[in-house]
Length: 180
Image 1 (tube, rainbow, N blue to C red):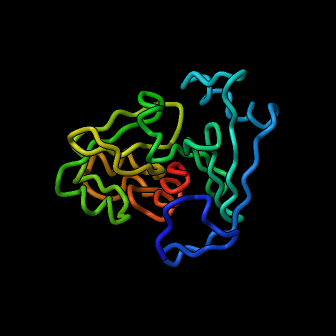
Image 2: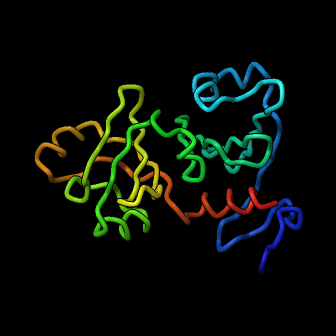
């Protein structure tokens, strides 16, 4: 089945074995305040912008700017930027640049390993890391593991868990939503 428009989706549609059961609604001003720091960082205008939530399943929600642009997602009560919006938050989250050898593995969902890291810019604000290729393209969003400093020093072991990557199921769903 080829889906060309978001409007053509039924309440329950399968896209490549990904079952969609979702509800989309606008967040109230009080609920939007939960994201105040992040929204202020990107210049969210309360007068003209709205934040919508797309409930995908009981463990996954996406937050859409003006019901179109997939800004953030929540997985297991932790908020992450989407791969689509990661450049919007440039400078806010930690960033890791990986070599060409690590790129295909990251794009297949592999975790970020120390040997593939060319450079890493750590921020104190969060344990979230945006994973980029040498040309600056965003590949994935991950969560730093507890002992990531040891892994970096030894240049061996896992540094971050790959949570969301380019062309994964969430990306395809959000890209489809964005195109509607």
